[in-house]
Figure 1: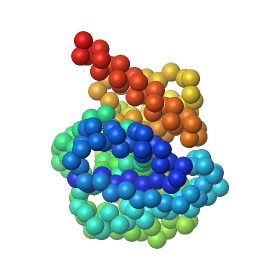
Figure 2: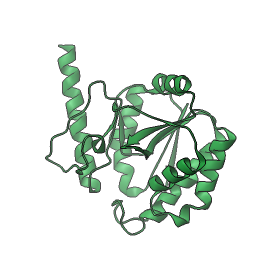
Figure 3: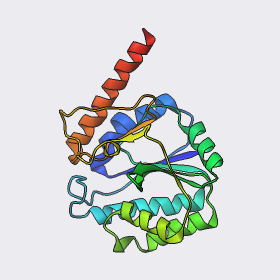
Figure 4: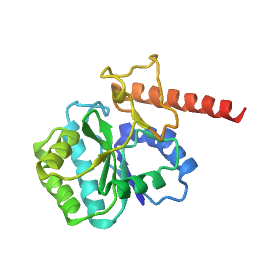
Length: 219
């Protein structure tokens, strides 16, 4: 399995402070591809001017990986790994007999974290067609959800241990709010919080919570 990520300058601190260190702790031997993009949106703010153009870079990365390697995981850079997740992903895909696993976004899919188990012709076509039409969509998340539904592509949701705040509330998280992580959390994804500062605060708080849990378990 290869892990793929990408970021613009506004999101590079997430990669440096949380993504890469946590990946090195839990999966130091995993092959990693990193895409770096120019800044298009206003400070990386969700839905700001330039956001749609920025998400086209993600479509390009997905199309490249769909043609280049068979088994891969896409993760946004604002993710912190909390476990070695490879065996779980491979086992779940084989058990459910699907080639796509997505972090849940209520009943939809979260395009910021998903696993491709096999690059079948159907999967390769999905990502190449998404790239061809990326300019017609403002949000990659809505695009991939619509394409999957229209084509009847089978997938499974990952469970709540692949966590983001939107799984427990529709209210976007802000610095100072409580944070409730599930037991045996596998990843923390800093979506459903407004702006770069809140994302950083969420990941830092999650890191402290997990450190405290580990200390208690060691005692």
